[in-house]
Length: 315
Image (tube, rainbow, N blue to C red):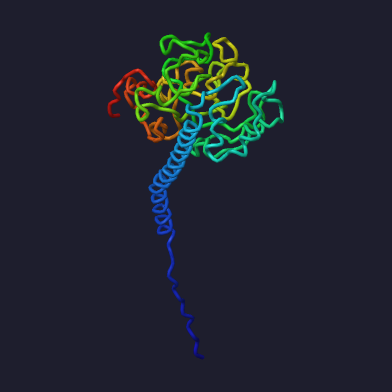
């Protein structure tokens, strides 16, 4: 009897060692590519932030063309500079809902509160790793602001009792700031004697409403503020939390990173960003540039004064 032999067919395949080697190689490649992907994403976010600043700068320029002045940071009804330029950044429909003259601009569920909760892309840097809405200071679902007006270099606190003299001699209650956008007083191109290309109008902030130091949140908001509303623009001590709308170069950029030991209200006044190494700034001529946070402090401050006569060097 003939017995047929059963031939065994050897099929090609991976051994366990080969499979482990392939997995290891893929892991190395992912580790090498992931930083590059993250850098590309941040570059895209930074480009969007720059576009936001350009939109804001264009809004300020058009506001000046119409009113012959830049907007004040706030006036006696708590409306902020970011609310006043809404018609010039294609948000006129939202602007038309605002109420300017009633006794309580910020009544719950009123049109001004609703406007504060309306998300505006141009006011929110996509790099900010925070939420888009917070119920804060009795305003529901407020949207944080990424950008602050330039009050100058003199203010070291919101109120007189917050002044830190080693940083600056004034509070934001003072009407005598040396910047471009601050309380009650509107500045003209003619007032910017250092040159519009040498003077900052608006800069980024490292906004974070959940970060609190010394009882002070790093909170910045747009359109309006119920805490600023008591301001009467007479130099008296009405109102507060003006740093919701403006920053000060009395303290260095990204102070939360580079001077974390300073008091909380100085951290809130600091310009800065979540971009690595610096922040975006809009100049009074409408141009936008990224300024490194390693900039010489004297040069940095010179960019924030409108008429001190400094000569800004390279940085």
